[in-house]
Image (cartoon, rainbow, N blue to C red):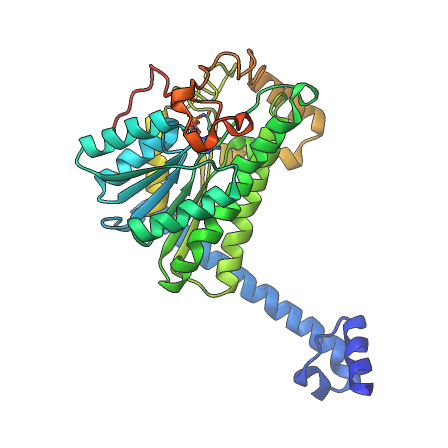
Length: 366
Ligand SMILES: NC(=O)c1ccc[n+]([C@@H]2O[C@H](COP(=O)([O-])OP(=O)(O)OC[C@H]3O[C@@H](n4cnc5c(N)ncnc54)[C@H](O)[C@@H]3O)[C@@H](O)[C@H]2O)c1
């Protein structure tokens, strides 16, 4: 009992309880703490300098790229947009690609495209807003295709209306697809990655996860949650000493020709080319890059957000993106006809994606 009280007292005094502190005479304890803190700070700066020098060396000399041949990759939202472009690239690198999407037609089209370039590809209809669906299909993939070592959480939806005009079920769906699905897919595939000390989890978030934009309140907050998910998960893997499983967070600005933000009104910074974004994602995967921001110079601009007063931040964002969704996003998108909806999902209108068929202008370069 008295030992417990002493240890509590040590905590109150800011001391680390343990065998060492107990051996140090009372009069020396303050000095010991100061010396220890100084040593900790020196060690921290040495480590930091080491990492920075390695980073600069790698940036100049190039990063070693890992082989993806024969690995199995799950790409959520692979039935269209960015997902299909990433799938094509992975297939070309020798990956077996497993596409998950709620859009049956888009899925079939992409499977054909991937097979057309000689790739191995499987398509599964999954509603990522349903945890049960995710767990069920993950089990099927494991049995039918094999152990997944690359998971790309790419599927996303956007409502594109002022918060007070956004129906509750769309807000719910945004969080279900854009972030909660990441929890369920990772819970389904990570144990096998840890078991084999080999895996990679990719979170396709957005610059909207770092910067708030009007009409995208649910989208921005879900993407911000996705950024937090990736960082905390990466740290958790490091704390657990799991060195073979990597995570990458991808934060692009608005992308042209995928369908999601087709009508966005963006000034000064041009919308990104979808093929270039897909190339950048594959590069991040192959080099185990933890964060990829697109365009890259946004990485230098982001810290300003915390340095300058809010009115300044507000002016910049409002000038940069005068209107994220000039027309309500749902209204200018084609609606799912019944034959495009898998039987198991008929009637579940809430979880339908906003992008239902790949846009005609969508050029899939590999
Ligand atoms: N397009 C952009 O400007 C942009 C910018 C930054 C980040 N992103 C992010 O990149 C990712 C891909 O976006 P995109 O531009 O290719 O969008 P997209 O709308 O073209 O593709 C999204 C895919 O997700 C699928 N999907 C939607 N809801 C689903 C559900 N419930 N279950 C299964 N599949 C579902 C859709 O069918 C579609 O194939 C998204 O996470 C998006 O938030 C996009």
